[in-house]
Length: 123
Image 1 (cartoon, rainbow, N blue to C red):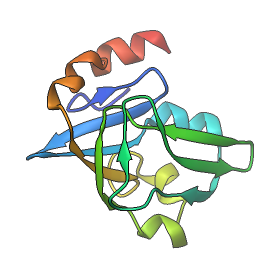
Image 2: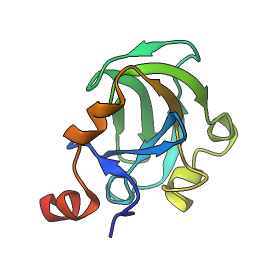
Image 3: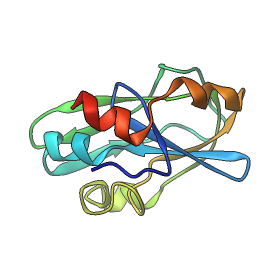
């Protein structure tokens, strides 16, 4: 089951509005499919991304997978803890395993993403 307090992209990223910033991570389903995550390539703070654009990479024992921005905006923070402990994404995909924070260009882009119920129905 996906967390109901966030929105989901078809590419398996989640987005959660916290104040005026959007926190981004990958879904529990995605981390389970990837298996043990061994490396995360984070974007640079200050980078501008557009909805659906690549903004990082997650590598696991099974595969490498691009991370896509669920909405457009500027990267204002990255989860540096993932550099030393990428397994946080496996352990806490909705908490300590967040990947980046965006200052959204247009917060209404969140409306185009799926609810948790809709996302779960696609799995």
